[in-house]
Image (tube, rainbow, N blue to C red; front, side, top):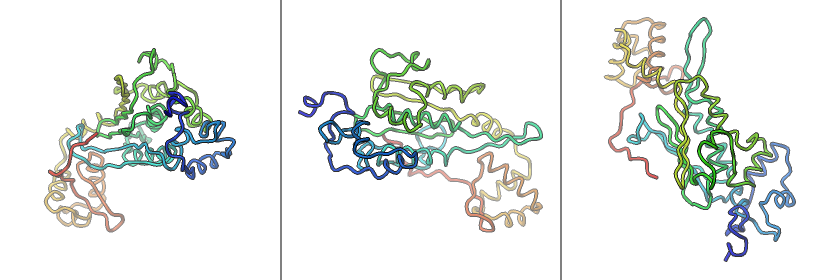
Length: 316
């Protein structure tokens, strides 16, 4: 009955929930110094001409029913969980919390190709931002299933519901052609300077990986769209991990494995190494991901992460 009255445009269809609040969205608009009163809500499409909240209003409300699920896996397969989270609330809240969550796992690798230190993030922040915005702005919200984001040692996958619009090929998307599925939602994100122009997202992602041996990829099916961002540091790290360890590195690694968790002072006493040598060696083992640390200052301890036999497989 609702479709017969309002049509098939998901954004314009009246929301089944009319008890909506916009605390998060109003706060976000206020930070951008953009008013969001009743008239603006009507102009933007959050409220229909009849004065009822639309599905677009639902998406930006605190009561948004659509969620995003994120999982972090050990290695390159969905075998061992390291962390997981689910995000709900308005799309603006989800956007900020998802980006902050991914950033926690976007490590920085330091190298010294010359005299100056060069820091490289595992994933170019701009590529992560564009892939995330694509997942939020262009997914098909007529489906209730969650957006899935999976973080592996060698890549991040963004899987969203909704294939390519009819008449658009993958080659068109990679060239910058854009036919927004959620036109009004995309327009709001454009007004808020979150996206610069329609169709530039994939081009920006490609630019972020210019000159890299690994390249992002896009896969699509009739009802889903996946963007994969490779870890630009992964190949260098795995090559380093395969290199033989020095005797002192092996001694420290064996001591940590046998006695963990241990402090730096305990390592120095057991191995007879100086403080400066121990600090440098621990730093290298941390960079190689052979050990981990927790705590801070005098309370810092080092350990090796053990896999759990009880970890579940990632379920959609």
